[in-house]
Amino acid sequence: MTIPPPVWLLDIDGVLNAVTKTPDPNVWPLDRWSRGEASDGETEWPILFARPVADFLRQVHEEGRAEIRWHTTWQQEAGAVGKLLDLPAFPVQPSPEWAVQLRGETEEWWKIGAALRVAEAEGRSLVWTDDDAGSRHLRRRVRARLTSVVPCLIVVPSPRAGLTPKHLRKIDAFLTRVAS
Image (cartoon, rainbow, N blue to C red):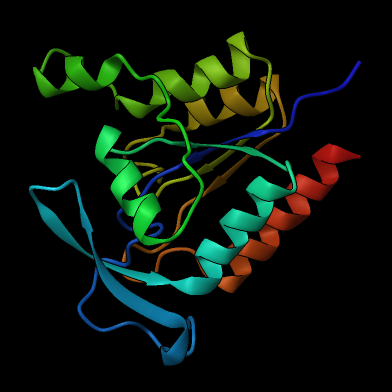
């Protein structure tokens, strides 16, 4: 029986899109950063990203090391960012909690339910990259619940830098470990 690869829940702002006007040359050399605009045909959004991060995502996907799913407030517009970064078409993680949160009907962070479904219902190892997955949104009890079910790596980058070389090495090591 073949074990399915981990699911990688991928946020955009603060993870792929560095939330800053000036990229940090201490994270990636300036010539490795790119600017562009993601567009849905009507609206354009400025994006600042490190090309090595996009290259890493593309490689992980092409090698089948993880099933990458957008898990972002961008929802269906995430495809516009993927297109700008020349990424394959990743699906958007189903998250009915998103609409509930928009209506103000819950205090729990909307992204938690989807992560728990990946771990508990799908039984899949999980990589979750989200600048908001710190203690304010992702409480210790939820982290413990996730990691008690499946191997789980939660990466919380600085929103001004996004994913760094250190983060990519950590993700690479995790994917290697769960594949063996």
